Image 1 (cartoon, one colour):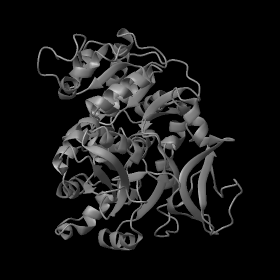
Image 2 (cartoon, rainbow, N blue to C red):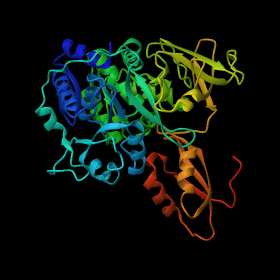
Image 3 (cartoon, rainbow, N blue to C red):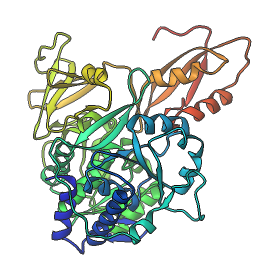
Length: 493
């Protein structure tokens, strides 16, 4: 089975079940599938072929789900890009992935007007909410819903192999250059089964999607997992904690998969006791480590079970998960999921005994095909068939894993990976910066934040706000330092 067939089969079983709800607009599976097929035909009319790259720069909305699966239904590769990407970042990503088509909002298309002519292969822009007769970004811009309305909802599916590429997700590289992790049909179909098999989600359940679907965790734990079993999904983009509570109450939401920041916000909310959210069967936290002291408090306050998981973009992403109906160990990232083998190894590559810290390495049906057009970077992390995570951990005698730190320089803030070298390179491009060093600083809600130490050039007086303005031109918002400290020399950290 591939992802396109998965949607087809669910639609045949539950055609009238609601697949997604957005801004109180329900999309039954039959309606969603028809829209997917129509867009797939439209993409083919625009020249998209098997393994062509379709770049998707969209927030959590039905159009994202439709675009993602339309790419699958024609054998193309959905390249899901962060909506916070600057024009500078997007130019590199579109060129690197060799995107043929860009699907985004009208405002984003206008925002990226300056770079689209520098992306030679991307000749078509599809906008999901265009109000003007034409989008200045490209004379070839098309309206998303017009394309669907003028295309047939009958689509012939291509023959796909399990190892064919399905999705590409970019992750920051150690050198500061983003790397495109190529995920296959096998990778993602296997991941789509986790919600049903391990968490017992079924077609009567309703999930709440608040983390971005362009993120690997959001796509698998929310979108793919619910579609696999015929469950429904409420899509939210911009929201407050109050709105989260209100939606859970009004919709009888069964589960939420999100980063610790959301669950801590719920726990610390002053008026949380006003809401009855006992419909929540369980919550999954991932993308960063949930402070273990708050897990029992969350469970007791909301009468639910908060389970922790762990993953990497390169592993599609889930590697470990605590089970809602199994033993819970606060501070643990759970046990290995089915189909995945995990070892803890020392510097020589030998397996560590229980309780001893080493690098977490894994192999299985969830491991990526490789980094797109970068064999050297792929060899750095894939060694003798094992994916090296760069994370330090230990395993107890019952098979539960516990993270202890990182072997590589990386910051995880609100579930997003930031490689310090990328930020340092941007800082050092400012004429007033002689040298820069970026580190992580612990933060309760975000897990970590980006902090920069900067040595100024005395010939160029500069203040924080000027440095931050420079960073925002070249870096997504989550990569921009939240703290800057000017120093006489770079500290030895």
